[in-house]
Image 1 (cartoon, rainbow, N blue to C red):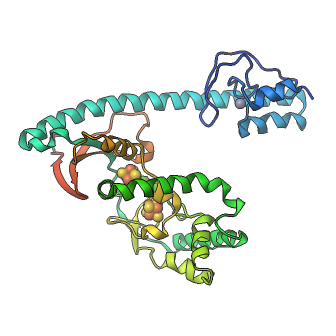
Image 2 (tube, rainbow, N blue to C red; image 1 turned 90 degrees about the vertical axis):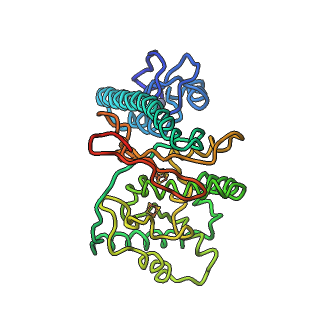
Image 3 (cartoon, rainbow, N blue to C red; image 1 turned 30 degrees about the vertical axis):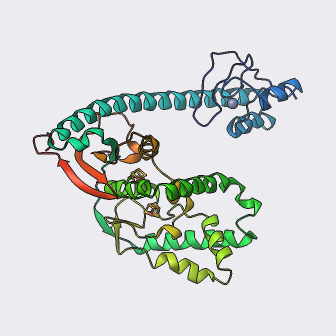
Length: 342
Ligand code: SF4
Ligand code: SF4
Ligand SMILES: [Zn+2]
C-alpha cells in the first residue's frame, strides 16, 4: 500500500544511529535522510519511502494500525524527536572539537615546560584521560543479588546455544573480530599493551562506570567458557565471578571496580571490557605505530567523567600529569591549590 504521508524534500540531514546522508533525490519519510539501497528498491516496487534504519522501518509500519490523522501526528512528533537528537549530537560534536583544540594547545605548553627539565619529554605523546575520583563503598547485598541474577540469566541463555559458533551469537562477531585484531596488535607490540594497561590504571577505569551489576557480561562470555570446559556447572561458573566481587567498590561504577582496578582477571572479563578502548587510547595506538613516535606517553588527567566529557559547561581542568614509559606510570606534575601545575 502507498503511505498517506508522503516524503518531503528537505536538505540532507544525518541523525545519530542512522545511515549518513548520500547523494540522492528521494528522502526517508521518517528521518528525512536521502534514500539509497533498500529504500530506493522499496520505492521502485511501490513500497514506502523509508530508509534501512530499523527505527524508521518501525515508525513507518505503525501506519498500518493507526488512522491517517494519528499517523500524521505521530510521524511529526517522531521527526521533531529526531531533529532534537540531531541538534544534541551536533552540539556535543562542536563541544568535543573545541575542547580537543583547547587541550592540544594546553598539552603543547605542558610538554614544552616539562621538556625544560627533561629534554627526553620533547617527543612525548600526550593522552587526555578522565579523572573522576569516586569514594569506595561497601558492596551492598542487593547489588550482589542483582549481579548473581544477571550471571545466572546469561548462563541459561548460553546453555541454549550449541557452541560459541552458534548463529545466536552472530551479532557478537564484530566484537570477536575486534578482540582478535587487538590480540594480534599486542602480540607484535607488547610495549603498546604494557603502556595501554598503565594508562588505563592511571585513569582508574574511567569507562567502567557503566558496568553496574552486569559488568557487560553476556551469554557469549559464558558460552566460550562452557565450550572450553563442558563439564562446568552453572553454580561453579557463577561462583567464579561472585568470589571476585570486592568488599568495597567505587561508588557509581561497576561492581568489580576498586581503586586498584578491576578485580576480574582478563580471561573472565566480558568481550566488551577486553576489546574496548576509548578514543584517546585508540589515537595513542595509532600515534605509537608511527616509526618516529617517542617511547614516552604523558597522561594528562582532566576532571571529568569519561561518558560526560562532551557535556555543556566549562572545559575540564587538568588535575595531574603522569609519565608512562615501559608500562610504568610515574607522577610528573600535580595541580597546585592556586591552579597551576608543578
Ligand atoms: S579505555 Fe580509556 S577511559 Fe577506559 S580505562 Fe582505559 S584510559 Fe580510561
Ligand atoms: S568488569 Fe572490570 S573492566 Fe569490566 S566494567 Fe567492570 S571493572 Fe571495568
Ligand atoms: Zn530513515
